[in-house]
Length: 477
Image 1 (cartoon, rainbow, N blue to C red):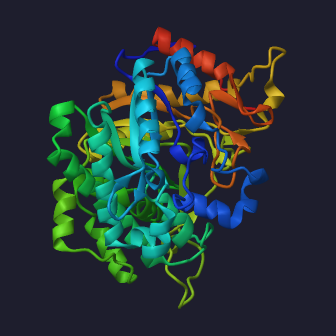
Image 2 (image 1 turned 45 degrees about the vertical axis):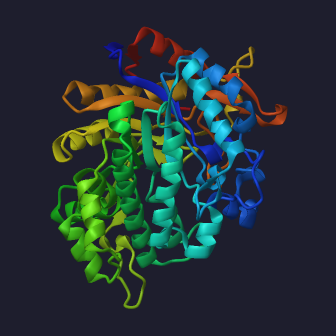
């Protein structure tokens, strides 16, 4: 074993989102989000029918959940404000006062408990009416409505919240819907995928501009950033064709948001490739200048597993819609360590590698691990006689990944913290409660009662002692 000292100002928190926790209590009929719409259109594809309707009922039970955060000792808690619920009129920015009071009370409860609140403005919670009426992020008008929404949020909470983020994983929804066509409404449209990507980057820049104009950084000492999910990419081999496949994969799925958000511009090569395949997004010089002049202060990185690619072996038939996999095939590393429940490779070095890349390629901007965690099915198998889930596999997973974040920090990368996904078990798209991620168990059969897992007590000790002990042999079950 070896012991690593954790700096006193290093974030040790946990994350979740509004739609995955709140439930629908108090929600008006016209306040559906895109996720709510998808669930209503096809709840049968969600594991055992669980979805955002019930979630964990955080909307009503946040006081007891915040008390558990305090008991564990979380330094920070990141969630989202549900855009679809915060307003009752999206065109005119009229606030739903009941929901706004809930956010007010949540912020006050967190601060009183010594837990620093962190908020995303959008975590897949695009209002359904804007999706149906304007095509969601296909529309420049929706970009302006998002900025109006952000203004109303900053006016209400900018005096108390110091950590703001435009989006969580801005590439995900349109990748599932329009690139791979595996989620509602199942439309393969690569050009629309690119327009969504661009408009979310533009929306981030416009919200940064608003944040600066409102003086929140100067008056309240706040920062604004974005939460990205870089797919840390490794080539199968050092052969040029495999290296090229990895470079192209990285261009489409990592630099797509890293570069405009942090550097203020798109890679020229990406623009050339988009033109070649006739999927270049619609933009104006004024918009590109806004992106250039309004980059983020901080970036959160959601890091779960590596992405391995090799040179493509398939023929691409003429007339087939363009997909970035034109340039690569996925590759499964023989002998890899796996989480068999989620089907993801376990490779903690992704945290270090991404951290050093931020240092070397992105100006060493402030960053933190915004999500990292291990989803496991049927965790009740590991309950002790005391009724506590003994999730040693999660403790090992956290310690190995946290170790790599601290290693990157020790080598000069500007890493400021680690946040576990998730604080409690919560709903995930389609998987619902099938795979559990939480420090806290949600007992669905028992009126959603809460129970700390062994990992919660371990995390509590970690936060208190500020000392990480890493086992030389990692145990996965």
